Length: 276
Image (tube, rainbow, N blue to C red; front, side, top):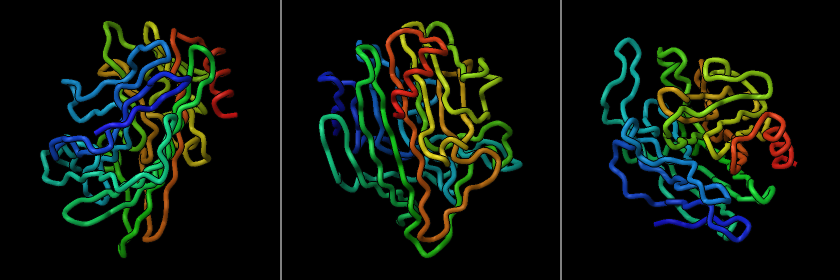
């Protein structure tokens, strides 16, 4: 089942809110394909290199030992392991559903119990004739009687692998995409760093990611361009994130989706417009 997201009268994304996926992929709602206003696809779904990469989604590899990322789980002093610990994000219902956006309730469940409740808000906004913005907010609440914590392979011993949270899998093309912030460029320079915004550029498209809340702006960027093209805003880089019973964690990422390969000045200007 899916919902079309429209911007400037054009379909720019499909949202699969009840995808039919194997448990090993950690089933969850996701956006794919996402396109520029000119129709160029800027997401990839279940690529051969990582079958659990699903367009644009919220994916977390470790919620108190439960895998909501998909694939193998990184175990300290052991490495990646195939474990029977995968969770599912269930669509619970719509609070709002319009052509240009929606508000959705989800339940994160594993081993027959609810670990987290999520309120997700997604909206599409036209910026120019060749660029639009995807505004994506998620809030995770611990509804249970026990404290939880979110981890990553990095917190479990794999250096530099602090992924988990908002994640965008871009399409693999003949050449690796470029990546830059306002100050530096290249995967090695931006990966694991905090920056107000980060741009990923293909031959005929640009994605500019910006944290739009104080917590999100403090999160490091997880970046891959050589191994595969993907960008995430990392909830957990080197220390586990506790979520006490009744507590809520909120993150908001606004992504500019533009036709053409933009430079720093153009990217910065579109981010300012998207956040204004």
